Length: 118
Image 1 (cartoon, rainbow, N blue to C red):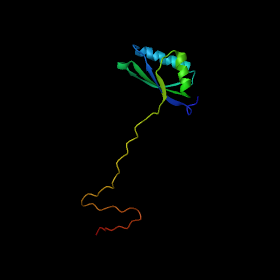
Image 2 (tube, helix red, strand yellow):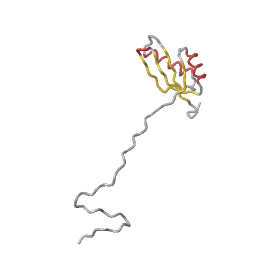
Image 3 (spheres, rainbow, N blue to C red):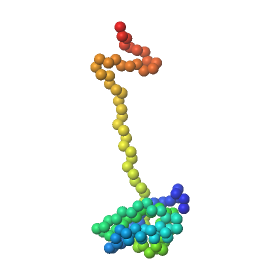
Image 4 (cartoon, rainbow, N blue to C red):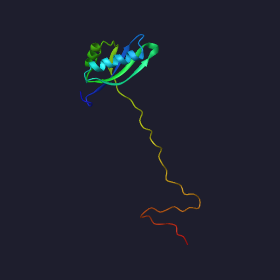
């Protein structure tokens, strides 16, 4: 699998009573069974629901399903996902500086000077 071909998937797992280290071990088994075709992109734990939402990269959902089955890790569903990131803030438009009272505007290159010191 090449990085350009990798697709992102969300795998919903329901693991009642599992501790964090047990979930980490299960994910290591999945990655080992993936034989280089499965990448880890993150996992969110929802302890109150005994649920884990794991983000993995792979070529196809059916291949990822087989990988989870070979690893012996139960899952509810596997769906393709898209990563969403906030756009960088747009800076406010900048206005040209306003000369302070008593200052004369500075002419730009090629511009005729309207003010003259006497």
